[in-house]
Length: 576
Image (tube, rainbow, N blue to C red; front, side, top):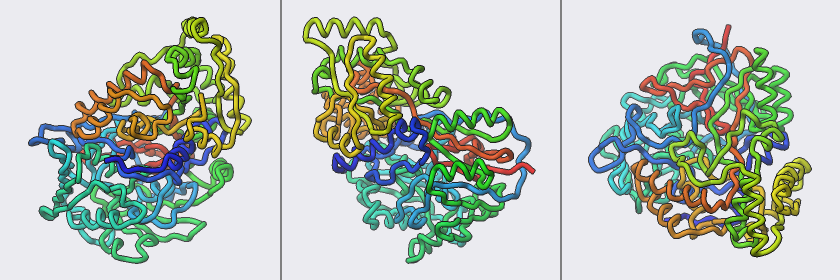
């Protein structure tokens, strides 16, 4: 059932997504590592389950009733409440680059591609304000008891920008385009057959249980299946350069390396947007992109650099800009090789975790108020979060554990690997000093990223800075926690394997949470990782740009407007 990827490819993806490297060093290129392997949700890709609303024998997702999981908190803003929205105006968004095209079934998208995509297209499902997966273009998404058959019912009366109807056949054609795509077919690898039941209903049969299928229908990094393109676009060889969706904005023009322009879709099924047009301007250099915002040349700028976000908070207090913080994403971690002495002893691992003063790390990173402390792979606001025996800060207790180990085995000394950037080395030195205070000796090793990846792949490491684990649906961590996956820590437990397998096969979120609670409890006790905090993007806007923290769902309830470096512009408006 697992779609295999090479350990090296996924290792590259994990290192690339470590927010510490991008944020702590002052870098702000939010590309989300498009070189990462793109796999279907059952292989641990980004996925969550539909909710169980008491339907006949299965799990049903509906916008007002979903009990689907919450994996992050909603974006927050500290800007003052704005007056009534005003229609009109043009917004310029600075993005980190351009895609090869804007066909979701064909072209690879970074955050920039998704942000253009969310303007032109809509997805079958979205996140609500709390992070639950709820239908959007779909009216309901229903799974049977064993999650092998999923039924999507569409909202009536939705049309594409060219007038074609969004019907079940259009959904079938979009899914078939994904299956026919050499790059993206793995995203639907478990889809065995499709049956158009009626104009608004399509039934999907899977080759094996796929409890996390609905999250595949939300447009995030690693999966673009949920974006619905017009049949005429699918049939056109120039479709990727002339995108046609159902979204709040219509495609106008694309001048490569200069700009892409969209205009308001007055016939949008969920109501017309406020803005007349949006211009996406590619600026690949992160420093130049920030400079363009600071000079007033662009209206929207997004960054994952904690120090930049805190600086913009100061400007926001002065009324100069607006800052909206997105939902937490993959945590930064310190990863242990649990088969390499002295890290093979849980007392040492717990002691090292107990010695780390998290607020002290955040002060050093200028991340106070941006990063959130963690006690496991999921933030406390997550539906998946459960309490565990993960150690709290206790340097005195840590020193006692080290003394106990040394009395039985010998001195605690190990290699602590990181990158070659001087700031990363200085960050490692902060850990080194904390561990020295409890009697543990960390010998810092600075290596090129490729060398660190090779060391991890070959189990030739003891302790290393790492990332890209946790933060979303637990099935995304299957390869990391299961003994049959990548499992770079080499920590295995039959109970974790059983729980990860069970969670993958279930569609009810509460039942899945029971399984993933087992995983978190064991990880908290055994500490193969030190969880050093969440990563979060900040979307910075010029004064007068309003509504970025808003995204209204069809039933009038709030949706999640920002996820990672991806955001919606449907409800954005400009003050006169």
